[in-house]
Length: 232
Image 1 (cartoon, rainbow, N blue to C red):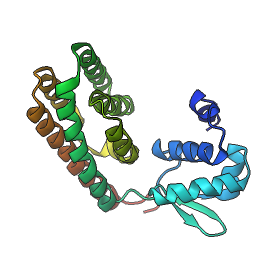
Image 2 (image 1 turned 45 degrees about the vertical axis):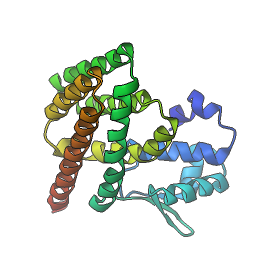
Image 3 (image 1 turned 180 degrees about the horizontal axis):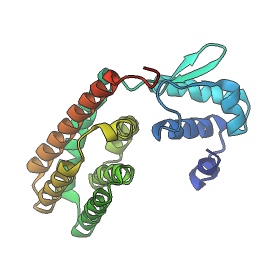
């Protein structure tokens, strides 16, 4: 937490509620606070080294975005990862990522697309050593770079509001889903469509890719819900 607070992005933030918001969202995204975990407001304020007022403001915003559930006069519970919520997020992302792929096919340069190839190569290397956490980070970078290549800042804002929720769900289920070799193949197909300057193909590949990932996550959540608890 403290290392994250010390990053340049947060050093530039003068408003404490924004600092608190970014820090809490970060640790929830990366499962440092797992789904269902309860945290007292005063404990979080102490960790962030600030008063409870900016923390409370941050929690109200996080609750509106679906990250936490506030417990009156106590603190908050990290929101569970539910299939219904994930499906709603994917309905948005499937469509917008498809649009981003089509725009990128029209606007990306050869040099920019070369970076996508580098990311794919790093993904393959991560899978060779079975580093699924590294693969997840690289996969997130791959999709984020395609959004950048769309050259549409408004699209970036909308997608970013949902992408972190998807990342958390993917990280949470990564060891309960098939090894993502198929994702790498689809990334290669996506890169080929972008290099060919084929917007319709890029859009179709991206939407299909996200739809498959969506189904895998839902299946993993069902499997995890059926698994016996450690006390059983």
